Length: 88
Image 1 (cartoon, rainbow, N blue to C red):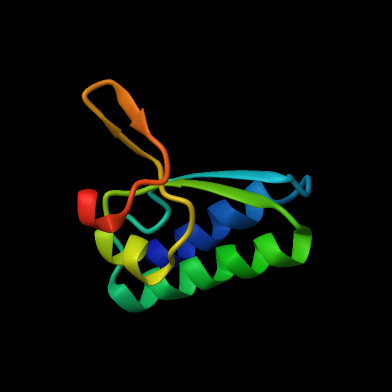
Image 2 (cartoon, one colour; image 1 turned 90 degrees about the horizontal axis):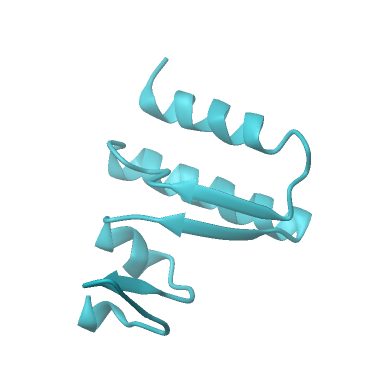
């Protein structure tokens, strides 16, 4: 299976019990930009349809820029709430 197919299977498996919170650790890591967009759109549509929250960790600033949301940054053992892309 491709990376995108594996991510979709992982997402489907995680949603079996209809969680209200989805924890996604690098859900688009090692994916090409098109597949990244597909996975992000899938996660967002699932969150809307099931009224679930998504907490996602990523190092991909392009994802952060394209899908803006509440941004929390950790640096030097400190948590910065309401961070912006400019101070990443």
